[in-house]
Length: 168
Image (cartoon, rainbow, N blue to C red):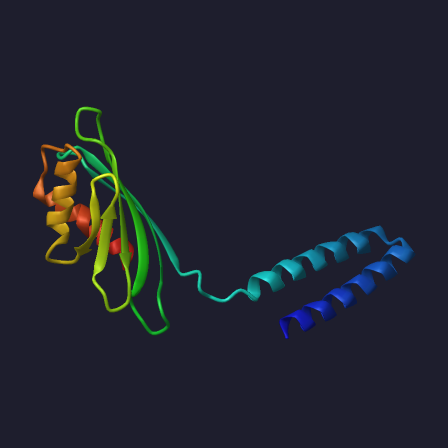
């Protein structure tokens, strides 16, 4: 259906453009080429399904513990829902100064009817459950594994809140 409509639109536009080219109306040609370009771009964009979802980028600084959390997340929210049931987040934890710990990455994925899972190849975590009971302890364990010695509980809670919020 869309292909047929697109073909019809193209034929009409090309016939108008060729008519203008024969008459050598420069301003009309420019206007028509611009209009055709806008129509084609609009038709390509509007034919895409609405499955792009959301993209979230966040950052949390923990100055007392000496780390910075940066994340980017992507997910989809179904019609009628308040939060997403399927999302993916990449989290990078970096030291603020070179004396404190090593940078590491975490990947979290949320699937429908399952606990969120967390993985880190660098730290050797393979598919650990990340939920309200385990997330803070897992994040502390990851920080300690990366060599962060001074860990403030409030900053861990704040980091976990931001990470969990990226998946919502």
